[in-house]
Image 1 (spheres, helix red, strand yellow):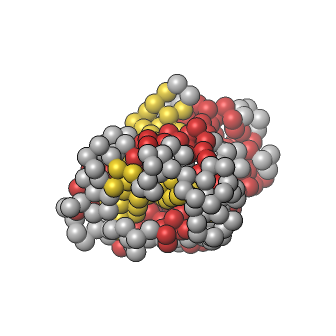
Image 2 (image 1 turned 90 degrees about the vertical axis):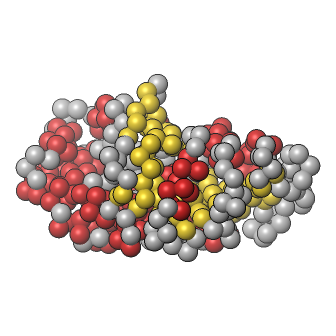
Image 3 (image 1 turned 180 degrees about the horizontal axis):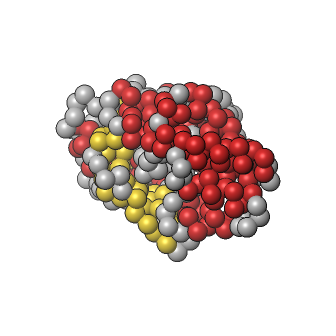
Amino acid sequence: MKPAVGVVIPTRGDRPGLLRAALTGVLAQEYDGGVEVVVVADGVPASLVARQVSGVSGSAVDAEAGGATGAVEAGGSRGAVEAGGSTGAADAGGVARSVRVLGNRRAAGLPGARNTGIAELGTDLVAFCDDDDLWLPGKLAAQVAALTEEPDAGFASCAVEVEYGDRRVPRLAGTGRVTHRHLTRSRMMMVHSSTFLFRRGWAWVDESAPAGQNEDWDLALRAAWRHPIVHVDRPLVRVRWGSSHYVGRWDDRIAGLEWMLARHPGLAAEPRGAARVYGQLAFCHAALGRRREAARWSLRALSARPAEPRAAVALAVAGGLVSPRAVLHALHRRGHGI
């Protein structure tokens, strides 16, 4: 029997169409083990989210009522929100599938929502899927197989397909093992939260991450420090950038990058990785019109790595030669970020 997998999908309830698609992609996985999905409503009633996902792929949905464990009907009264007439569901092969909707019981925000889901699950493995992303066919089976082949490993990821507008760009890692050094030199964006699969008890999200910024990079770094991340280098998750909550939140991004530098001193010790972070800080300050700070961080980036392109881009934004939105649009169309 394949190990049971629990999937945590955090949501604010503000993009129900994407949430339903994300849940459908999870439940449609051809996998011979049980799959238990916990959708965590962050800052909105669980009953609202339960109504949004009720009936997806024939799943039965249990939801909390008023913060206490219990089932809530689509109309708001106690009872199960079900499709198919039972409190659980199964795929075509008879393998158990279930969906529950819970309220965030920990710190408000994405890290607390993820940890709420982790704490609720009793499965052998835990996976993440953001509510605006989509698992592609074969994702779960490929990662579980790769992790099973390495009993000493506890954490797996996979390549992604970045969707932005009408474009889809694959982002591969070029390796089957992602090390701590890989993640220090580069963010390795394909090691994305929606690709994470790990053994239960291996990982918790740090809830001190400012506004949830970089919580996934921090988690990947800590996991890779214990053991290289097992990576399936095929695009098995579609990451939708156009719907991100984080784009343009420049102060939050600055706080998140400074948090990472303080939390992971090795970032500043690696010239290429340091230049990248300094260049990102320069760009964020430039986007806010803080020309002096943008210049200061650009100089630090160039000192660490004279060829760092983000420094030049940040200076161009600070000088009014190009808008930050135009820069991000051009990069995102190529499947890259700043």
